[in-house]
Length: 281
Image 1 (cartoon, rainbow, N blue to C red):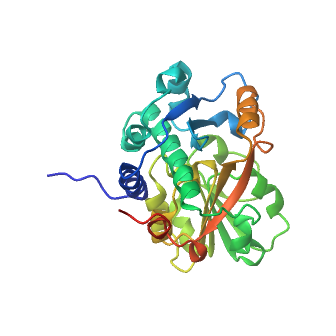
Image 2: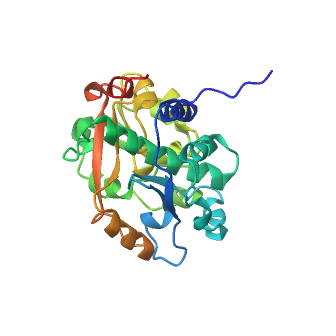
């Protein structure tokens, strides 16, 4: 008998489903898909699931042919959908179901954190918790352009792990490679939250030095952090919605989100765990 492997993503789905079954949950209000005609930029590759209570979950749509599937789907079909049904699709092989499923999982995670009373730290920079200026060797899983721009003044080494071929030939003063095992030499590791949607986070973490300080960052990492912290990640940094109406306006025009969102971070040593925040009945 074949069993599906246990991964961060499967643990997240199980956790949210268990918590969700014990309470009434908001349904899906709408699905925002990336605008194919918008100007190039990060926001063009992200979609958003919005729940009836205003909770939002971002998902990365730039993998494989996810964007093409999203552009031909009708977002109205998702209105009123049971959110847990979508969450279960995170483990689907269908790219559209998987992407929207992660958005639903992130939206429900934000809902659960809010009703638990947990206060997101919106003042700290998640990268600040890694003390990057004193790092000997930073491993960056995913091409974080803003960090690359400011890294030149640091004395340490930077290695970028990136699977997307478009980044492999870029003229930057740092090595870009597909070889994840290069992380073994890193004392700081910065991982894109997009590793959740393709379920590669476990593989990435398996190559990290257990003594390394590790952060998972990005809009699609706005999930419950419990399974992530259990695997040794030190800090999760993501995006929360501060002004939903303004965010919707910005998303429709493909503009940057910063006026409608705030960044936040959750550290492993300060997070009590969702089981303590929302005791199971």
